[in-house]
Amino acid sequence: MSRTPRKRRSTHRVLSALALLTLTVGAVAACGGKDSAPEDAAPSSGTSSASPGAGRSGVSKLHMITNDGHRLAFHVTRGNGHTIVLDSGGGENSSQWKDLVPKLHADTGATVITYDRAGLGKSDVVPGPWKVESAVSDLKSGLEQLGVTDNVTLVSHSQAGEIANYFAKDNPTMLSGAVLVDANLPPFFTDEEIPRLVAASKPQVHAAKKAPGKPENRQLISTAEGFAPAHRAFHKVAWPDSVPATVIVSEKTPFDGSPVDAQRWRDAAASFAQDGPGRTLVTAKGSSHEVPKDRPDLVLKEIADMLATQR
Image (cartoon, rainbow, N blue to C red; front, side):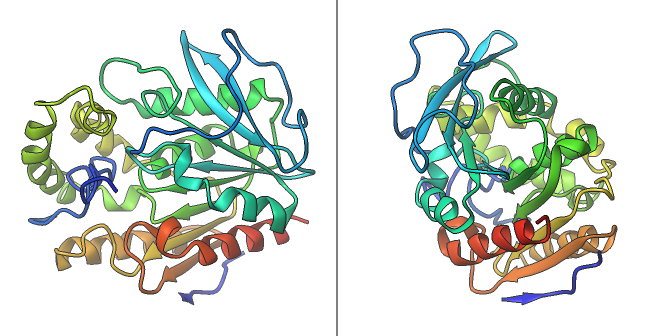
């Protein structure tokens, strides 16, 4: 691992074409889920009003939350004090974190929450293009209905970096810190890079439309709709100075086959880390874009370090 000082599965996965259409299908070569969900049975209908304190410590409990007419699955492992929210990469559901949750809970004693974004895992499908504003609303509503309104450390992988940036911008007082794990970041999505991503994704999007019912294909198709204007807007989003952030960048990046795009990915992470107080850049040596799988030790350490600065 190398770091700068703190300034205050599925098919090479629907991770590449959208490697940054959300980072959902492997690395973009030219330029560039699983559907299981853990633990207890969901309530048959309605919204759970239980707080993260409900249930036994160390045991994950499933809460079905309703927002804007659709239901979302939130998995809560009760702890004390801080709340850690783990947000999965594009095309992934909460099971991406299943091995990390018990270790994280044991190491930190915090409440740990994972969830399935719309259309993934146990959450309802929402037709139409993927909209980051809707994803932010789903996350915020779910946390509020669980009684979580502050002292949150948000851990976001890949596409979830977009949700994290908008969430932090709109709700800085809810966050005490963030760990951005090889995440989509605004500096990457320039006027030069966006057309490369769109062009590189076209073959995968075309193939996905032949089997649109598969969750990973549905994710790819919905993300491709309106991708360019959405990411031109994302490029302008500013992270609030009041929220400290650790930026983990993979050594291989999502663009292991494209030196130009891989360097732009690294440069974007470095630029983001240097652009405000309380930000740290960490390189996950030897890791692919799948840092939670390749380097869970590093992810655990950086989350624990972020929490330690808040105590």
